[in-house]
Amino acid sequence: MEKVDRLEQYGRRSLLRVSGIPENAGENTDLIVRSLFKEIDLDFNDLDVERTHRNGPLSPPNSNTPTDDAADCSETSAEFITEQTYDNNKKRSEQQPRQIMVRVLNPNTKIRILRCRKHLKSSRNYNNVYINEDLTKYRNRLYYHTRCLTKKKRCKTMLDCQWQDLPERDKRYSLLYQHCT
Image (tube, rainbow, N blue to C red; front, side, top):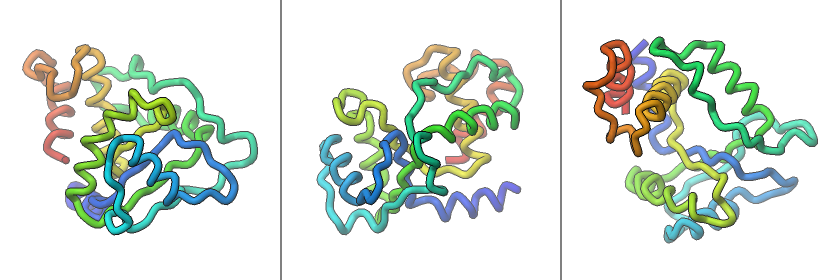
């Protein structure tokens, strides 16, 4: 299981997911990504990004309005996140526009983009847009669980949390995620 996950994640090492951008008929995702990168003060070079496209099947009409519901971590206990919780979040995300997948040519470009994504919060046009790594299902669940633990500890970032204060079973999942990436 671990080896398969590692191989699958290796194939995703150059992918980013951009979520929260509304869909339009006949849109050009390259232009959308270019304007997004300009907004976060990145010098966009056509050679840096190999390909951009929407992920998944086309949504039915009138269902591409994003919801304001944030992921609720209240039902996440010390146990590993359950399939039911993950499926509830999946149903919520079906109402949102499809994500834009961005394949970069150089891993350093990906790191630069992830470091500059913090500027999206202060952006007027893209304040509800999020840029994340493309993670496997297993690593995504670990990441989600670790974020929930971080919110409960009210830390600024996951690295700010003092994991030694957590019960042993909670520590296991946070450390698992930190070693996975």
